[in-house]
Every structure is written in C-alpha cells, then in structure tokens.
Length: 493
Ligand code: FAD
Image (cartoon, rainbow, N blue to C red; front, side, top):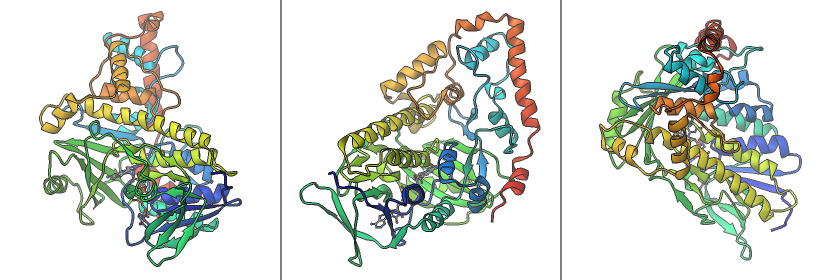
C-alpha cells in the first residue's frame, strides 16, 4: 500500500472525469502522469445543467474566468430555485442563494421577522434578501462593489469540452476506448490496470472512478457496497428533453411538483433544459413522457430520453487505490443541483489528502468520513422538501408526507417548528438562510421567536425591518434585466 503515486488513471470522461482531469493536471501535473479513458460509444449521462454558488471556488482554483466559461457553455445566471406546488398545489416559494436580513444579532434574522409578522409589519421573508428579490424581478449584474451569491445554468457537455481543452493544454493523456476488464493485484486487491476492448492495458498507481452509474471500478470490481436511500428519496427515473427558448431566460431554476415527482426547467442562452424526475412505482415511463411533453413551453429539440437511477451513496468513496468521483459515488437526485458540487468537493478533498508518498489508511478514512458527513447533510436537506408537503392528492405525495425520515432531519424540523432555531452541523453546505427559506416555504412556521428580539421596542423593530427591506429594494432596482446583462457580459460564442 505504500508505493509512491506517480501515475493517476481517470476512468470516464463525463463532467466528473473532466473536472478531475482539469484540476489534477493544472495543480499537480508537474508531479504526476495523468491519463483519462473515455468511451464515445457509451457516452455520458448528458444532464446536469444547474449549479450552486460553490462552483466559484473550483473556478478560482483553476484560474477560470467567469465570462469565458459562461460564453463557452451558453450559460445564464442562477440565483435560486422556484419550488412550485411543493407545499400544496398553487403554493410556491423561492429558495434563493442569498442571506436573509442582517447577520448582526445573537439570533437569526427570522426571529425579528417572526415578531414583525405577529405585529403585522412585514411582507414575505424573501423581500429581505437581495438575491431572492432579484430572482423574482428577473434582474442581475456582476458588480465590483456588490457581491451577489450566484451560480449558473450551463450546457454540461460544453462544460466538459471546455475542461477537456484545459486539461489537454496541461498535458493530460486522453485515450478513447471501452474498458472491458479491470485487473487487480493478487496480494492487495488494489487495481492494477484497465484493459480496453482493443486489448490495450492502462496501468496506474491511483485510479479515479468517474464511470457514472456503472461504477465500474469502485463497485463492479471492488464491491464496495451501496447504502440505499430510496425509502427517503423514492424518485428513481428521469426523462430529459431540450426545447427552444421561449422568452428571455429567467435567473433561477424552476422545480414544478407533479403528481408522482417534479419537473425542472433550466434556461440557457440558446435553449431550455427540461426534465421530469419521477417514481416508477407510481407512474410508467410512457405516462411520464406524455406528462412532460404536455408541459413544455417551447418546441422539443430532441427525443425525450429516460434515465434510471437509485438514490443513495457508496459505502466507501475511497477504497484501496480507487476513489469514486461523480455518479459512481452515489446520487441524491437533482432537486437542489448538488451533484457537481459533490464532484468538486471530492476532487478538492483528494488533492488535499493526496497520498504522494503512498496510500495510507488514515487518508482513506478521513476522505470517507468527510464525504459521508457531507452526503448525509445534503440528503436531509433534500428529503425536507418531500416530507414537509401538505399534499395528499396522489399516492406519491401521501407516501412522502407519511414516510419515515432520518432522526437528524426530524430533530431539525422539530427545533425550527418549536422555536425558529436552525443549527448548522459543522461546515455543511446549506446554511441557515437555505433551511429557513425551505422550511417556511413548505409551511413550517415556528411557534415562538427568540426573546432577544424583545430588546427592541416596536418602533425600533419596525424601522430595523423597513430599513433592510428598502435597502434590498433599492439595490435590486438598480440592476439591469438578466438578459441585458448576459448579452453584454457573456454572450454565447
Ligand atoms: P457520466 O456523465 O455518466 O460519465 C461517465 C463516463 O464514464 C463517460 O465518459 C463514459 O463514456 C465513461 N465510461 C463508462 N463506462 C465505461 C467503460 N466501460 N469504458 C470507458 N468509459 C466508460 N447535477 C448537477 O449538479 N445539477 C443538475 O442540475 C443535475 N441534474 C441531473 C438530472 C438528472 C436526471 C441526473 C440523472 C443527474 C443530474 N445531475 C445534476 C448529476 C450530473 O448529471 C452528474 O453529476 C454529472 O453529469 C457527472 O456525471 P459523471 O461524470 O459522474 O457520469
């Protein structure tokens, strides 16, 4: 186990493979020989177009320029997700990436807002958050003195192509071919080499499994095991189709709940990505396709494609000399667009723990522990959207409303409902503002606010709340329309 790592083999060239390749060649290419194998015949999963703001970290690390990446990927800005019909039919809310109110008191802004609500002095909580209001008004700009928390909607295949170009400039060795066999060392069980259909053998010291749902190395070869979460996240299928754009792109993703799942609409500069995520126990592929096609805004540009998946996580993401990155490591369903984030986290974590002098168990354990914590937290946040529904109009929603949930999530919901408190677990991805927007958006209203709020007399509280709201309003009204800003800042190439 203690051979120095000189040669890294990346199996798979989807978003995960090319993100790993770009990062490793750029930052560690001087010390490593890096090879990527991908199969044109198999292709990629071909979805994954909505991101979250953490992607900036990855781009900064790689020295990528926002305008250039956006122009190359037909990207638009994303300030959050509109959840429609989730709490109940015709009840909508927005989960924006911004912070609510001001972060300057011993208790969260929601407590001030809750007291203001009791006194009839507030409007909806999103009015106290610039990203939230900007999304609703369809405005956006990147300004030197105002940093909005934003992400992107982008063409995933163009993004992989862009990263491939970068990895090639930094010396990646790309091999096209289908892996037919994975060879292991007899003594350790470590992976020794990949054998392609043309019998070419690709040896390596460390293997990164980016083979998507196939998980060719981490599961099919190393049998690492899978923790199935489909009892919490029952959707197991998706149908994806692209359509012509209708109107100017909005700066948020739409997630529209349907009888047995939900539909996404992701606006790019040149087209819209659409899909229906559903549970096959409650609707057939044929009926789901019909439902999706009946609810499109523009003309379809391709044939609808069915994708099957199982929600859950690999029991170990790093096992022996193999690290799973991307869908090979598990999938939480795309509701909060967290997969690309998890890819970048795994890549950064691997680089931080990189076993240059040889693989040691302490690095493996740390990697697996951090990954598990991260997946568990995101899982809970996604389950919340399903569990906290009031819908009883279909078998699917009745199942979600009544299903068992992890104790960790149950505790968070109860705590918020009782006293409006939200606690963050370590450095988890979704912060207080996200939990509040989704919990309130789904109809969970705290019974009490924190007594610290009573330090303010009523007129002071009213002035405090009005001041935040009017500052947000002024800021947002000074922004251009999202489409106007895109056309000047990053028009598609
Ligand atoms: P893939 O794209 O499947 O790539 C696998 C690669 O492995 C391919 O290059 C393939 O050719 C290669 N390969 C496989 N087997 C072999 C073999 N035998 N020989 C050689 N090569 C092989 N994520 C987000 O962040 N935001 C979203 O909005 C989002 N939406 C999604 C919607 C749906 C319905 C689904 C299913 C996923 C979504 N995701 C989303 C997840 C996102 O699509 C993936 O995380 C991302 O595309 C990375 O996939 P991947 O590279 O792991 O796998």
